[in-house]
Image (cartoon, rainbow, N blue to C red):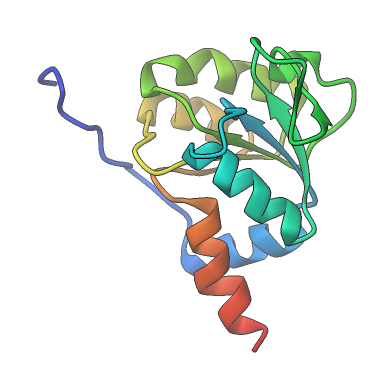
Length: 149
């Protein structure tokens, strides 16, 4: 692979499965959540909170984001979460996927521009649903909001 070339997802679930995921998850750990309001991760987290999801910030440099306790890693969260939403450089994805597997998190969602096929294969082999290179906010707006009208 050339430097700077983006990896493309080898697999993503069909739209119906993504819609079902968005309907069933309640607690979402957002890995790489920024405290800065102008960052996409922060905008997405605020949107999800307004939609009724419980957000668990994961950022080792912060104690609290959006009024929620912030954890250093997925491993440090002392309760179960339904989904890990990754706002990370793709190079940083494999250890986070490893933590998600160890913790038994059933869904890993990699945001737009985040693709790591090898880590995704490991997660899927462990029985985890994986979505790559999609924005959870955009998918929610397109699917859930439009289907509830």
